[in-house]
Length: 89
Image (cartoon, rainbow, N blue to C red; front, side, top):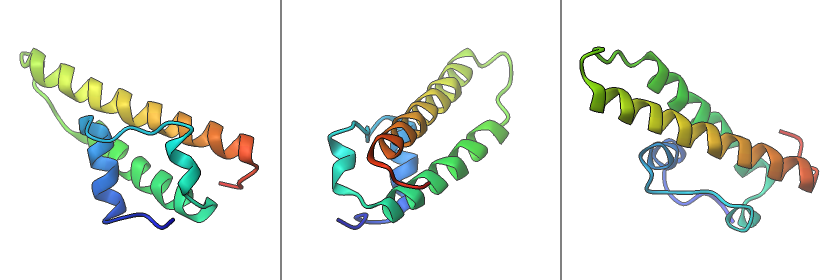
């Protein structure tokens, strides 16, 4: 099943906690779809890491770290799913 909508928006939704990937939810995607999702997750991760947050803004730092954690977790889940299914990513 192709990716519904913009893949970068999907990656941003993952970062903000609106979308979550599981082994079961990844079954609907092909290897090429997973490659596109992974590429966009890495783009969003790079944008999140480059974002400057003042050290006094504890809530901002917490949000930034949570977003980075969610994207890293999604990347790990996709990579492990692709390895078990034999997709070359």
